[in-house]
Image (cartoon, rainbow, N blue to C red; front, side, top):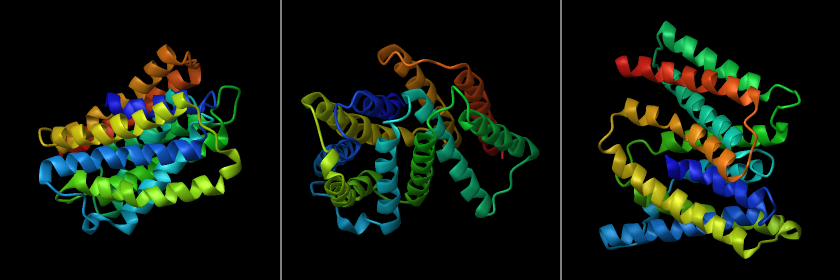
Length: 269
């Protein structure tokens, strides 16, 4: 969970002060993740990732998540971005569960309503409201990550599938770089943060997550992710001196508490 939260922190640290542009950050992050995941696959299976695991839907969702994530963090603090991202991911998964026929209890519907209202309150216009475009971009990023996660259900070798999906995203990220060529800039520090985000927070983070999933129930795995926005907010306050606004303090319990209530009801069922 620290690795997942670190993605928000590293992205904000690099993009907030303009150490690197969003498109270049995305490209370097993807390349670093590809290298690390390919090395892990080679070490475990003795071959490079196979394109047989590539899915158009997964690649498209992963790319939308990555590119919107980077451009959003030019405008958002780490804690606010992680909170909106995480809530969008979970709400997307809940909506898909409903569409697939799952029925929520009354308490589950109350939890969904509380989380949704918390999100609405967080992004309502006002002095302390997050940047509207940044909020939209990070919400789209969260929806895309939810779709990507759901499309990975039932994959036999998730690490190898992730490696090839990241590899397929590389030319797409490079294309955005060419489109944004006039805005391209990067310092050595910005590149280092992008590499850390891709290699450690993304590549190794996903490897550790999939290994951990073998020892967690689905409900517990979902519940533990509630810690990600909190870790990102604490990290943002400690390392980036980001303000923790009253709006964020009020919206966070509603959003995370509502999601926790839904997860608890699903776990019982």
